Each structure stands twice: as structure tokens, then as C-alpha cells.
Amino acid sequence: MTKLIIALNIIVFVAYTVMGDPSDAEFMYRHGAVFSPAVTEGHEYYRLLTAVFLHFDFGHIFNNMILLYFLGDALEKGLGKFRYMLVYLASGILGNVATVWIESLNGDYSVSAGASGAVFGILGAFVFEVLSHRGRYAGISGKRLLFFILLSLYSGFATAGVNNIAHVAGMISGFFITFIVDFPRKKSYNRQVNDIRNC
Image 1 (cartoon, one colour):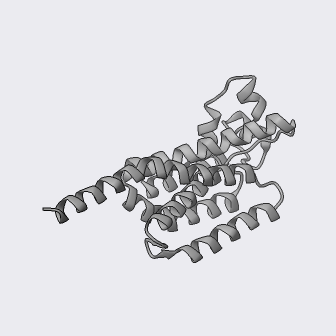
Image 2 (cartoon, rainbow, N blue to C red; image 1 turned 90 degrees about the horizontal axis):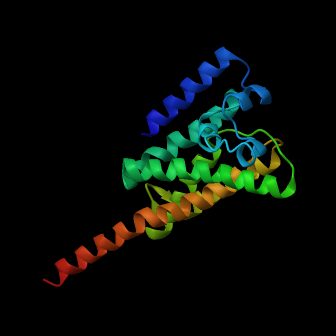
């Protein structure tokens, strides 16, 4: 699924580059990017999902997809395809929901798009898995993951024009969604192990 997601994002980016200028806010708005008033007043809720597959330029899509490539496969193998896709898509959507909510509160609107919320959701999922596996998961230690998260967040806050709301909300969403979909399975495994030991 990770390779499929990456391929889909690349195909969409190439298609939109041929059709027009992805770096143009108006062009992206017309093709499904998030603009808070369009969601809250126009009820165009589909934007919360379509924006997850849109990127403004090559650097934007490259950074998101390279991060997804290195982390996605490991998480997919651990969670399974369905749970993995649920974490990815829900984190991306909830990151956009948080963006709309915060922008509606402060009245500062901008056109936003990108897979960052979903990708940070994968990071949040890794946090849960590292914690539940006692400090290491898929070859990644807690310290290494923490450093990576801090570096990613710092890069976002230090760069102009980055939707940090989607980053933070996506990561928090990824953590709790993984807890919901994976923790019961872990309890079931532990129960089976205990049953076997008591035979």
C-alpha cells in the first residue's frame, strides 16, 4: 500500500503539473485543496481528503514521499494493509479538520494541501508502536524516533508557508488511531500467550 500511495501522489502531481501550475493557490483551490471557508460555508467536505493527495511543488512532494517510503513499509507490515491505510487517511483528514477549525477561530485563511498530516500520522503511529514495544520498533529506537520528530517539527516551524497545524494534529491522530486499532490486538495476543502458559 505504501508504494501504491507514493505512486498515486506522483501521478496526481505530474498530471496537475501538465494541467497547470500546482504552485498557484487559485489553481490548487479549484482542484481540491483545503480552503477553510469552502469547507465550513460551502460544505465542500471532500477537500479534507482530496488535499491529502495534492502538492505544491517538487520539493513538497519529495520530502513527504521520501519520509513515507522509509517509514511506511515497516508500519504497514506491523499493522496490516487495512489498519495502515486507516491510520494514513484518517490522520491526513484529521490534520485538515484541525486546520479548518483553527483557521476558522483566528480568521486567518490560506489554501493548503499535501500529505504531511498523513505522513506525520505515520510518525505518531511509530511513537505508539515504539512505546508498546519497550523502546524499539522495526529497528528504530525511541531516541532516534524522538530526534527525527523534533527535527521534522523544527523544520516545519522554521520554514514559512508550512501548515504546522496539520503536522501536529496528524501526528497526534496517528498515535491515538493506532492505539484504537492495534492495542486490542496486542491484548488478544497477550491473552493467548497467557492461556498457553497456563495449560
